[in-house]
Amino acid sequence: MENPATVPAGMKKLQLLAGFLETNGPLWGRLHEDDGLPVMGFRVELRHCNPMQICHGGMLMTFADMLLSFTCGIGAGGRKFMPTIQLSGDYVGPAPLGSWVEGHGRLLRTTRNLAFAEAMITADGAPCLRTSGIMKIPSQETREGNILALFN
Image (cartoon, rainbow, N blue to C red; front, side, top):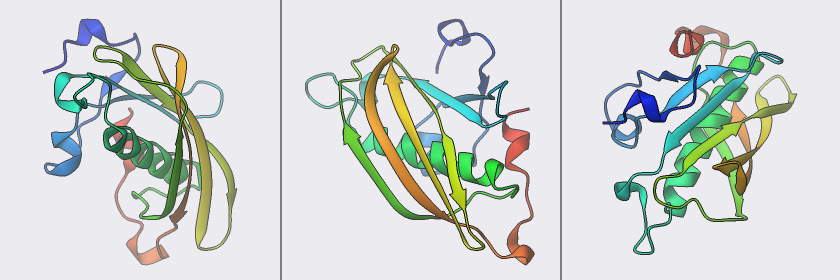
């Protein structure tokens, strides 16, 4: 269990549903003061690492998927988690064991059905993953829920 003292000030533990997302946590987040979009992070634990004690690319992409989905969901005015249509990433540096991984997504564009976002994810402030994604905006009748509540 992550010690809150090792998490940057202002971050709140995200209470995710049980299952895959909760298993890979704990994940932390807050809303950015300038644009109201999510800032998310996690501390790299041994269970996140490959044999070289560097965060596994699969964990970084899982984190990127969640960050971009929440960014699109909040930025597009929706209240529900958006499913991923496309996700890409370029590994640009390591995220060693013990490092703080953090990302702040940027909503690029929305259409009636899709939202486009990108982020630079860092490890202790150094770039480790450049990512972009396309998320499906759910139909009106399936927009119940409140992802903003995770960050408040």
